[in-house]
Length: 120
Image (tube, rainbow, N blue to C red; front, side, top):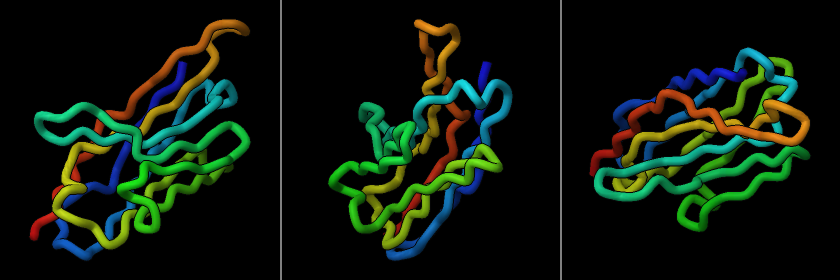
């Protein structure tokens, strides 16, 4: 199994920056893909950033040019650097990891979530 622990959320003014971290532990060698999601009150959870198994990054249009995801393989950690934050970025942010539980079956694990609040 894989476990994820997030950190780095908080309250920031519009235009400010925050950096989220997500550390994986357990069977980290089985991880295929990492992701960052967010869920605002009354809205569905949406994918913010995706890190594929080969390291390819992709972002939802609303954060392109402002958010950057990266990973530190040695620390099994992924980061989400968020710059030029806007009030509409306010949400609970979750990291995720897709991993193999057997050769043919995969599962997803989620971090506990961290609140990001951007004041206007």
